[in-house]
Amino acid sequence: MKNKISLLFALLIVFQTADAQFQISGKLRTLRPVTLSLRNLNDSLVWSVDISNSREFASGKINIKEDLYKLKIGDFESFIILENRPISMKGFLDDKNISNTDLFFDGQQLCLSFKSAELEFLKGDSRGWSFNAIKDKYPGIVLASIIYVYDNFFNTKIESVKEAVLKNSGHDSNSLVIKHLLEKNEKMSVFALGADFIDFSLPDSSGKLHHTSDFKGKIILLDFWASWCGPCRVEMKSLQKIHEEIKGDDLIFISISLDDDRSKWIKALETDDIPWLALWDEDGFDNSEFRTQFGFNQIPFIALIDANGRLIARNIRGEDVKNEILKLRNNK
Image (cartoon, rainbow, N blue to C red; front, top):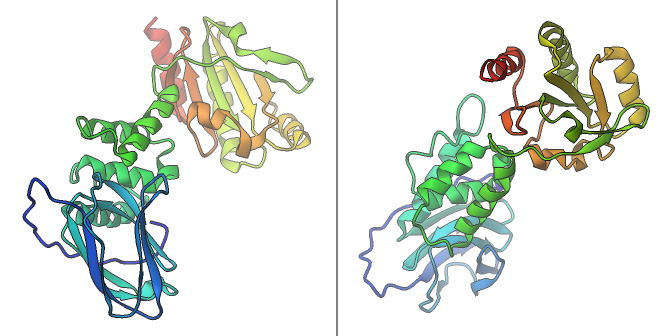
């Protein structure tokens, strides 16, 4: 959830009958009349009502599927998991100053679980947000919802997405949030370890095109970098040392610049004196298709392709680069 707000959720255990239906009701203290609306992840309206200060509101009974929904009240927006059973709302809403808002939702376990999981995920650990903090504690649909809301964070988290898919095995795949999870997992499969490498061609500094298909049967190391990336330049020095130690006919290093400005790339080539094949992706970092193909958001990013054209290692650095190459050679 993008808004910086601490929501308090109370759980009311409600007996659920076989014919239970969704219904939302409540009474909010508000500073102005606002519209409350619920939409699904396709942005289709489920229900809406105009509410004003301390006036009760209620929907009729509606059949919905267990899923993640978008709740909007005035300028306040939040994601919420809803089940096909009643839920009530109360509390204070200052939709212009979200930090003053306290909303309580009673009646649905998954609603409570999602908000608890979100707080734990965001708290994470010393390194930031942490999926590990929640993956074993919450139901699959809650994990799928966290991945949906924080989609960009999980763009390179292959194992986290796979774990969420496994935990949702047998769940209703008609749920839009589960569909999103399965689609994301499918897209990420292209850069899962063991995936087939996709051939490409790029120009060197003289403009000559080089095709990676020319290097079939060799171990290929791909180093994605840019002249403006300080850590990339440091990693380049480490790679030069490794290259000198283990170079051979079975191994090809390729550095791919994601510079927007060709002249800056050329200047960096001269400064760093790269001894292996150096190519340029003119699309630059922001628009490079390699970020999708290999699943990375930051550089330097190093990937290793084996002699059979399979992705064997990704996002490796330092001595791990050398160790992975030697491991491939020893397993021949």
